[in-house]
Amino acid sequence: MTAGRGLALALAAFAVVLGCVPTDVLENKTPSASAPSSPSDYALPAGLGPYTNVWSADPDVDLLSEPVAVVRATVEAKAVAEMVGRHESYPGYGRFLDQATQTAVGRNRIDVEDTPRYERPIALNGTRRYRMYDVEETDTTIAASICDITFGIYQQHPAVWRGIWDPADLQKVTDPDRLDTDGHIPAYYHLWRIELKQTHGPDNNPEPPNATPTTTTGLDRADPERYPNQDMFEEWTLERYSVSVSAEPRCEAWTLDAYPMAVVGSEGFAYPTNPVDPAYLPTLPPFPGWTHIPAV
Image (cartoon, rainbow, N blue to C red; front, side, top):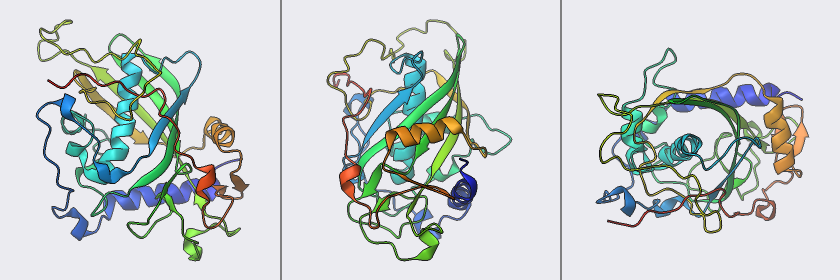
């Protein structure tokens, strides 16, 4: 099965989001939040809701190693930034994007995070699932491909008119433009390629003095947190963050494994009921999660 029209439609919608954000949203309507006195004081904005993140990867990928953890933080922080803006996302994320490499496709295809997409964050329930594959590491770089899908998270109470790329809500959908040709509510996946480079300051010292360690290797999985409260991006630069235009059979197989109740039609994946039933979209414990450093 290929993503077909569904993937093309999702990519088109993504492009629209990048280039056609309403002017009233572009005004200074970012949710107010006092900046933490230190990264360790950071907390997710409450308006985002209780949703969690669950990761999977090939058996040889250590989701808790530092480079892989930075990739995870990059992806999770992007989802938060789309709701509240880059500088209210994970600690250090705003600076991380400000220093991102300029590429041939623009500023890494993440201009939408300059300003939140909505007047207010959409409170989400459920679980965002991500799949990491094709991880390539050197001593100073890491590259990885990421699958994600809108299936799994939902709006308990719709905050805005929902487009096809937004999380489902619990109301019956009657607008034919938001249904596939079979009358189902579609769920689209994205394919991302991320490349990061490790730096050690302007003099490239391999062990910069007073550097705060960001490694998460060996952390206890028994008590995971939803977000990091440390700067995971310190000493890393973003070289590439781009969306793929090709279908990925591994993403499709992963989606069916994670959501066996999903409807598979001519346009891709869809929810089995209309309205969406939250019973098959539980809020799972985050995996592998994060641990918090003590507040200073």
